[in-house]
Image 1 (spheres, rainbow, N blue to C red):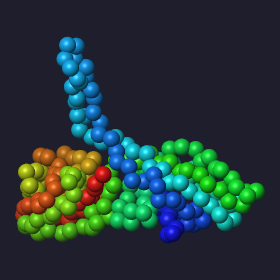
Image 2: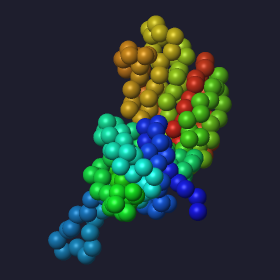
Image 3: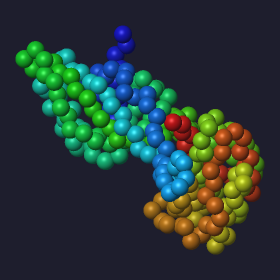
Image 4: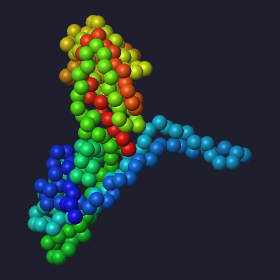
Length: 232
């Protein structure tokens, strides 16, 4: 049986001699929906809130070598890396999540502290991001980018120069008064910037999304687009 591992914020669990079992990582998140009961009406109305809720991802873990040393080092590492970080595992080598440790580490010690088993539970954002979506594509004047998933992606776009960028049904205009050589558009955060300089006053229109399938792009200049594909 293959020994699996996870990677949290750039560090492999194997650095602490920690292996994981391949269970607890295949669940899907819940859609946020409110139900409303109407007197005199059978059933309930549903209101879709337009997003998916966080999901709990559990890694059943074990250490069978230098247990005391490794569990102490793992605990210190996890406690020092609080908050949401990048989370990967060898079970899904082409994907990553954004998660944070959400429960205490409760170890079941075996063999006079020579081995131990425990669960690591991460509270994760609902998306499973595709590593292929981290590749940047440069497009000059016009082109097409194909979204291979069933979900709208919110890309990071570097727009060189000024003018109107159109992606599918979305258009966003960079004001000609902009003096910087480019502007970065974070379509997830709906934020425009150049380094640490906020440039939201220089953009107008809709931050683009990449719909499933082909997305036609036109711009009188060059853009660099990192699509951030994701699935559930």
